[in-house]
Image (cartoon, rainbow, N blue to C red):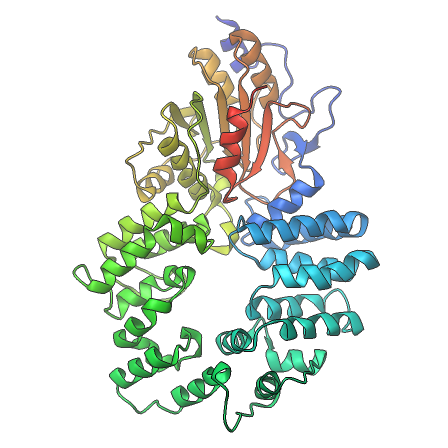
Length: 536
């Protein structure tokens, strides 16, 4: 029997994953295996990008959230400036699917960090992270958990309103009247903004008391338009559509009855943002605006497949994947609504998924991808999207490798280490269905390297998508990687893509040839490609 077969069967000297490596600092993961702790600031990145909604197989949502918040709070107290830098950078770059974790972290820093960092959080942080009125209201709902409404907080929130051009601010407060249990009227009662500008004072009076100006300036036209729209409920759909088109009112400011009419949605379509379009594809189909032969369908397809437009709108890949999974199912995840998906829209969403990632240059690396499809990867939700498990997300991300590089082999931990063929022409939906049909198995993240050794595969880059709850192997993954390098003479690299916001990784922090990245970071494919091309 070969040395490798002995190793695979645990008959060769090595350290089982159920025990820590000698002379290395490791932690016990939730499955009982020993792995490395994620660096403190990298753990913050995981929370900001993946969130903690849905929990994991081993931890409830509440437990995972408490764990992450405890870590974040301790780091905010000890190194708040560095945490604030991460919060701002990830928020502005569009790398995270949702801004809510960043807003929460900003509120925490504003309450728990040192004086200088708290002041910076309320000045620079509030301005750069809370870019919309919705973000501001959410921040206000969080910040009360960590501090009171003292002078610094009141001044900074008032400055947020004062800094925006009157017309832009009017649009924001009309579009986002309330969020997270807060209204702008609530905020005004706490922060007391004041202004000497006539137009801004008229807008502030409308926010605080609902008072419409007698002769509104053009910058405040939306206030009157909203009042007109809500008084026009007895008109027919065509009149509603005309008011919508002429007023420029956002969808959120229209009476709910109007949003059942295809003519109104057609009037909204030219100004509907890309993210809002993704969220409302099912509604547009259900009301009858999107049909296989409709002009509106052609317009939507063109917008969804415009890569420059997607990136300019900072549409995150997970938003596209969530829209694809929901739309093609023909049924709402949390409601009873149904629709018949339009095939052209499904195809456009599939194309949009790849466009939403940062541009990635081919690496030429011989790549072996291992997808963890264990039971633990099938629990929880990526950033709170129903049905979008880490298992589904990992399968979708694997397709980006196949579409970028020519020499990519995809396999999965299921009944051992098995082939999971993925072609560049496959759709995201096809890959997800294929992965969902694989049976669960115990997790051994050393298998990709052991498999490559046993089958004499030349591999430059191993990429493992996992939650790092590996425990079942006879040797640790880094031992298997080291052995592969020694036996083949190939300076193989390992990328570990963490798909949950836990504090675990199998990537060796002392090995320059290993890299830990956050799953569904919009920049992840580009980061992996850059790492693969880097000369050791």
